[in-house]
Structure formats: C-alpha cells, structure tokens
Length: 347
Image (tube, rainbow, N blue to C red; front, side, top):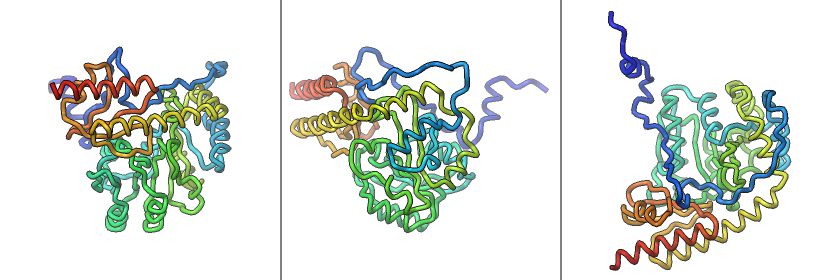
C-alpha cells in the first residue's frame, strides 16, 4: 500500500467542520497610519518587574485578578484571565458546546464568534442587523424559539459601534435559560456595562479586554466575569499557565495607573466626535459609535485610495468600512485622505 503524500494526509485528516475555514490574516504594511485594528494609538505601557522569568507564571493570576476585582467591585473568584477575550470565547465553547448545539448572535458582529462556533461544530444562528440597529426583540424571539446554549452579544458592537440598552439585555437574560455572553471589549468608551447586574442573573457572562482602552493589545490580556459556578466550570478546561508573567505584570501596572488610561479615553471620545462631525460635513454616511472607531459607507475603491495616501483602514466589502480613532495627527491624516479622494472624484 503506497504511503500517502503530505497533501493526502492533510486532505484526509483535517476535521470536516473546519475544511472551509480561511486562516485569519492580518494586513502588514509598513510606513502607514494604522487605523484598521481598533488599537490604542497611545502607548500606555509602564515599566514592569521582569524578574523570575525562569519560573512559570502564577497559574491563577491571583495578583491580577485581585486588581481587576478591586477595579470592578466584584469577587476575585468570579474572574478568569487569559490571552485576550478571544481565549475567553474559546474557553466558553470548550466548556459548554457540543457538536450540533445552537449559538445565537447578530449577523454583523465580531467575526470570531462564527469562526469558533464552526470549529466546535455548533450551528451559529444569525439575527440580521443590516441596518446598523441590533434588534433585541428579534434576538429574544429567536432565543425562545431556538433555545441556544450560548447567546453572544458584542456591546458596543464591533464593527458598527452600536450600543444596546442595558434594559434590553436584562429582558434577554430574563427570557431565556441560555448563557448570555456580553462582550464588553469597548465598554470603557461609553456608559452601559452589565457588570453591576451580574448578581441578578446566573446566566450572565461578561467579557473584557486590556487591548483597547488600556493600550495593551500586544500583551494579549482578556478576562471573563461570571458566577463562581460558571468560573469553576471553565477552570476545568483552561490550560495551565495560560497567561504569561510579563502580560500579567503589564495589566497590573495598567490598573495601577488607571487615571492615565481614562484621560486617554476622554481624548479618544472627543476625537471620535470630531471625526464623526467632519465626515458628516463631507457628506459621508457615518454611523454614531459608542466605541473607539467609526463605521461608514463609501465606494468600493476607497480602501486602496486611502492606502495610497498612507492611511490603512478596515474594509468589510459591500461598501462598508471601519476606521479606528487614533491620535489627533493620525485622525487629521485620515480626514485629509478622505478630502483628497473627494477632490479626485470632482476632477
């Protein structure tokens, strides 16, 4: 019997559920203003103690969890930390999802929800939000009808910036026994966190990250807050030492210097409103945002035309774009690029 080639092995051994998946690609372009990934353009990192790197990190991230618990006024035992909120999403899938289970969420939202659902063999049921607004009545009706294991809500939503009212999320929690996961990656840029409702709903789970407002995207620190029962469940599948010592230290330092973070957040919010108003005056269709980015519509060629001006934004197809709110100079360069594109159109 002939030995199969490497290609044959890959074709025969890969799991059926992931055959059609496309690897996540990151655009790497040098010498451009990067406004494509919702990163914080200000480097808020502080010097950290790098001793004892010959030892494994604190498996429970106890010091970091204590700092987060103090910051949010929650119990330390209600927290799990890891490599970005993406790891938290995958831990939820590992813990609760079996092949064929239903997961419910909005159609236009964080792309990793659908990808992780596919990896773990779940059926992702999409509720349409084509017109920017996230219809919670529709979501609640689908939750009652489909009885999903997990319901995933990004609030404020990525990529649209839409913010769901807390009352509507509470209606959802009351109407279903499903686990309601509220991804608050961008919540520092607005009001409306569900953190003070955790004690009211046993099925509520909140995700947070240090990648956005806290300026630590490179450290990859995320965390989950939920009841001790849920945290205990997830702890059974969490890999040992899942968050390295340097990242733990960086997040602790960030929390110790939270005043700097929120001063920067205020600047980003002011710049967001400024850029929004400028784009509206130019005639662009821009959606109001509660996050650190703006979602807007324009012709298909805009991405390449802005790139030729030295500005990188995120293109979603179907004439939809997202631009991160960066530093004042970054934002001015983006607006100048838009003005240049319009001028070329007139000529």
